[in-house]
Length: 137
Image 1 (tube, rainbow, N blue to C red):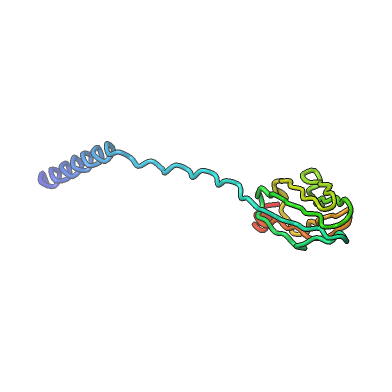
Image 2 (cartoon, rainbow, N blue to C red):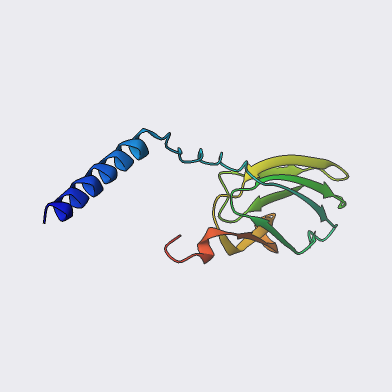
């Protein structure tokens, strides 16, 4: 009987010593969180003809992109350009034969924004991104 207790006592001592050694080992720290990705950049070049038509008729950018818009008026009169849903972000008056540049952040996802030339729909603008993920708006 004494031999069993002696083996049990030695096993308990060995386990305690192993746990004490393990607790002194350096712990691995979690890797640092990745830095947030910089905002995407999008360049859109639009051309307005004499009738107020816009080319290209459809533009798509990712949500959160910083959009630089270059608009050239090939017509013979001043044209105003705005973007439905982004009225507070963008409104340009482009003289005939001139080019206007403006920028805005595409922060409203959706696929049904209209380019408005002199207040009339002339093309489509879409913002792709998180609105396709469930729970995002």
